[in-house]
Image 1 (cartoon, helix red, strand yellow):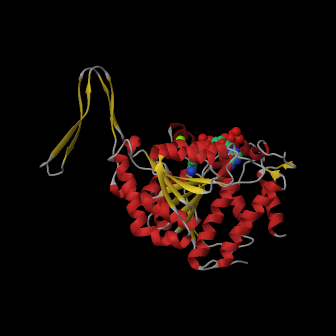
Image 2: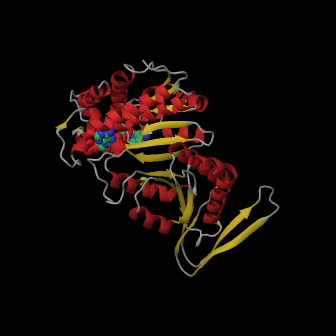
Length: 399
Ligand code: NAP
Ligand code: MG
């Protein structure tokens, strides 16, 4: 039995992923590890009962313990309010946790040899780090009814200075938009990117359009450079991690011709668009992991997919669904490996490596869930339901 020195924050969730969460713990973790966790139930009912206080407590626990692992959770909407008889609607738990940790989310596909990416040159996963604040996502925009001036105005807090520039002298109707970002947020983003890259030993690519947007995108480039030079260059050199800046169009061209195996730090919009491209070109949503890294170094691991609602309704009717638990398993292994590194308990990290290997070996031996079976080449030997698949992994764990 492998022991743990310190606990991880365990954040339970909803629906089919909650079912798989319990299954993964029962079959793949508890028999092997003397599991130490601080448990937070973020199931929708409990978030409602505690007026979301449990979400805030969970985020603080991640910060305090340094490591968290999270199940997928329902983001409430009108339909969910009726379904769960909620007092009120709650903000997305992921947004609440991200806000408290001031973190950046990194999405990384899990590769297996029987699923080839749509881009034939990709040999290693491409990780996307998306800046999740500002730009067009916090814009102010207006329709322009007719001729007139559109201006950008800054008024200082004390009211003493006012700066204005002309955006456009409109000759007829059109549209206008104002966007912003902050030095603090860009700096946190850059710090999280370098922390993650050093941890994963990945080169960092960052790209903007600073040739056109000299001040706005120029500021992103400047802050990234500054954070790299002043805070991370030495640590990066030691870890063999390089930093590469280029224009966004050049980056896109290189990404589709390259081998992969790097962290692509993206501005908010680029990250939104490119993460969906990378996810779908890499295979299945169920094979995508997600890591939230705060500039303080605290990390939270989760699956990128949601609660797999439709499978849950079928499960409730008695079906043993073929829902893929791989990203959930990798959320746990990520958290345990990190715990092992922080606590200097190499057995725990080695267990995480073994569990990942057993999981991938199972798939590569042709035993997999339905979502992968549809994509796999050669065709699978057996398509399994979630319970059979987990049992197949257990058999490889004890080999
Ligand atoms: P979803 O749970 O990601 O599932 C969408 C579809 O993707 C499923 O119907 C299924 O396709 C496929 N899929 C996703 N994960 C899979 C897995 N592990 N194994 C097999 N197939 C998988 O998204 P959703 O149904 O749009 O959202 C459900 C709930 O999740 C929502 O309440 C949303 O708020 C929440 N959500 C939470 C998070 C999070 O906590 N991080 C993220 C996204 C969404 P087939 O039906 O074709 O099999
Ligand atoms: Mg998107």
